[in-house]
Image (cartoon, rainbow, N blue to C red; front, top):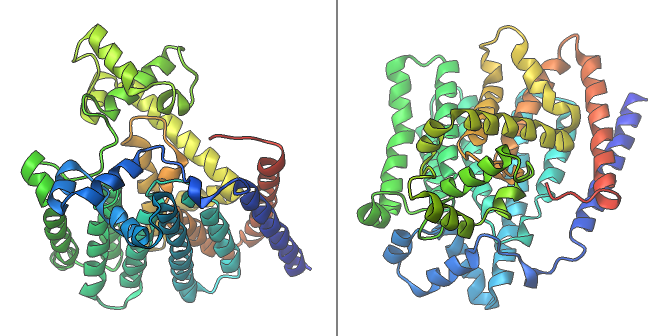
Length: 424
């Protein structure tokens, strides 16, 4: 009876997702991919210049390179970006499910299909092929890096190739987005946890770590040599204009929100505080009136920095509740159970580090799409918690939590498809 009930819940859950996804794509055409961050302009620059000039200027080089492959066939920039992101989304689903399958081979959970289905539909709902952004493209490389790190974790001995492959993939991420720095934090944390929980001593663990760190440093230095030589920085695509930057824009927008001049919403920055507003403010108050770096932001206004961090944490768990229901709370409950330092919890620790990093470093009201690529870590943290609760006296609690979560997400899907219009 319980199996039958769960089966019907999964069917309704899947139908609601299909309705939601069809609804969100009903007016979309590959000929009308939106370009909010001017990636089309960056692609045109890519077409006309050499690698050295492109990287010195700052570029999402690998993303543009793949777009170029499709552009040679389609001769249409919008369609080329659509194909790149559509295929990336399909690959992200494939590698993510492979990762969940790898974990389940160790534990044989009866909830594996449920977690896999949740991950599948959450990824399909990204709809990144509607936009020119490169989030989902980078996510493919993150998922592959996670796959190799997990293989290292489950390997009985040590296989240097797994760390080398992970380093190569993460170095390629630096040719896509500045947020690859978060990927590096994630990977270094993962290597530490893997070595610590496999009981490597300090010397042994350090030697193993070098198989990750040295290829990473060498490749990043090689890839970004033009920008390092010309500007002493990595050659990331820069969405700021030439006269000011996003830190200044974020500070101005968040201060206006803090002072009650604008509503507390991400659009108060991304739409209602433009670079032209930053120029006007600097002209009136002086060139040093706005912080230019995250460090200056934190030093000038630690209270505002803390408020932004708190808001982003609340936003993360509220938005995650929409996608995972009560399941998003399971990793937190798992962390509170003894022993607090447990090798089985390392993916939950990694999840916490990723959330903390992404909520803190932007110094602005975040967008949930910034977790694109880390969705698999969310799924793994939940799956790890599910595996624990499944084998304890809390198994009935887990069953109710899973069923309630499926019902909640089903309701959210139908509301968003037919009742609620949300731009968050």
